[in-house]
Length: 214
Image (cartoon, rainbow, N blue to C red; front, side):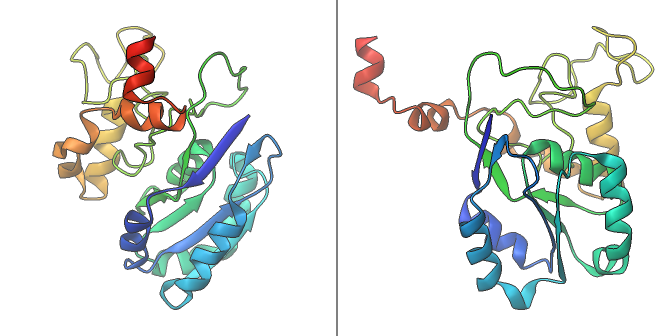
């Protein structure tokens, strides 16, 4: 089960100034989307949007590729693409639009414990603090076998992970993607260096007194 929520409104409004193309996904019944809030946000910023596509099962890469072909010109004319979906959908669109900055419109709520297996190449760990907007739409948690948030470990060789030689180094992929978008300096921002665990604790209903008691 995935539960999503809108990202910080100030962050979203800044993205709407870039003349975005919007992609919404509501196909998977295992994922909860705040559809009413998304529609309200889009209506408030309708004049800034270059186009909107509503897809079912955005995580199906071949289907999404064919479906998005009809929106090719609108996507090309946009400044960015904002995807309202779980993290998998954002990663799929980022892969299909390599020359376009793809941003996540949603965060997930943090879910602990084993959540099942995915048959797909891409995955969302429901970490509660999505970094896809800072890493070119490539997840540093799932694309890196060590889940590093602050860049490459230094153990990769020929672009392959030292833990799994058949796996591409996630941070090399991230850097190449950002460099292609001329956004490589974004990795120097402190936002990607430290995970804010307080945000997760707040969502779980913990406070300082509760933690002391435990």
